[in-house]
Length: 300
Image 1 (cartoon, helix red, strand yellow):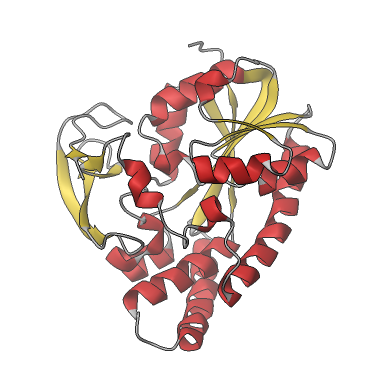
Image 2: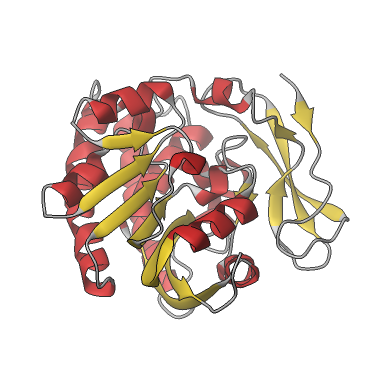
């Protein structure tokens, strides 16, 4: 499949990068992909990247739960139960931070989060490019479109991207479009993996949250703040997604020890997740972070 080089850093616009890690696509192709850091701002990118037309081929797996809603294995079923609890916590966070009741969820997958919001009085709209995931979401009687350009309403009180920004070929353009769709008092809520977490440093190229080549960009608190600011947002607050350390550590253990007993891997992952969350407390370097931002006066 065709790969294209990234010529300019999307955070600072610089044109030179240095090698950081070589990671494998553990999900589908087992190809190796390169991570590089911008020599000016340190932003980490997958380089080169699959084209927009071809990257969909890297999602064609029953193991990709956010697109399939898979519940075949015991792990899938446990994951989905924990995920349902997390949906309620996400809703509580949005209701605490938002003053309205209209939400746009970008990369909504099979629509579980939108369903949670709709059932609790929100007007909920989703964007999902995957036909498989979009169909499953629409079966839940949700309003889903394929592309953000199909959205014209500019009065959303909350716009969310739950582990989506790292997948987008054009993150700056998406953020600028979101800026135009968000109400004046609205909140942008973005969750992404944090490559400065303990589990990222421990697992290195086996860290599941690098997830190449589906993850095109790899953030820390500094680089996502800069990207948001240049797209017209002010970062208000950073919060942890503490469950992610356990989930990502489990996937990483399976990458690192594919032939070891799954129960043993789960035990090691649980311990690693605890350590990661403890190590994260001082500097807020959890495995994944939620960024809450509001609009600045800058217009696009």
